[in-house]
Image: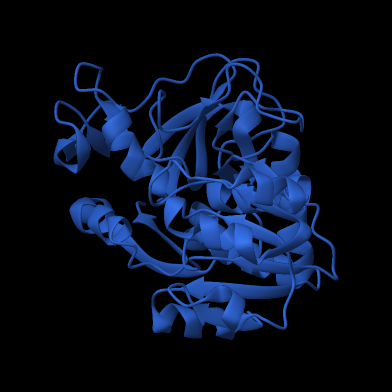
Length: 330
């Protein structure tokens, strides 16, 4: 089968399109013939985290396709079923944090950027009928992350004002759609005028430049819940804009990881700072029910062929996307 493989060199230079053996189907596993696969910023990070002395790795966490073969002891599934893959391995029940042994598809195990993949049967879920193959393939990781951020960690309420600095990523476009679906008011920021315009078209109530003075721009607004994924470049502004007693939930850092907090200002403000990553199988099921109930679809930016992997990785690395991108495979 053809697959995007990382090996021998660190970073994007280690990527290549190769012909490799299709994965074996072991007990309790299901082989899926992939139709589409979604890209995430995690895929870029994996090219540095996957070491040059480790075996070659097929990248990718998101995917959708058709069941091709099933191993022993697999029940409730049938060859030919249209499915999506939950990329979270080993996290069944919703909990305060992932359990020991939790992994994400695409490191250390081979991922979805190939024609076939073999995954545990527990990670196979019927494809939502209202989604196209492209939409289904880019859905899982970002939608699950956004769902846990807003609902499990952020405890979003219809009367809340939610702020999403750096709008444009897959997670934040899902967060915008989810927040609007429950009736929240949404404020977004971006360095790009076109992304602010697109966010307004998706329902954002207020859109301001990231490099503006947020307190001046939003002096008549209160922010109850802020989703922070930028890191050092915006964290100080994020902490200064939320109301006293308000909450920041962070799930990533596209700029530097380390931030500085004025701890006195923090405890006088009675702020809440929460971390979040991915989510459980239970949350994945709840997220799917939520998007089906509200008719929510991913914001699909662009699809690439496997042979366009260099262009796809550079496109994502340069944050050209508004919403999700991915690969059309079969």
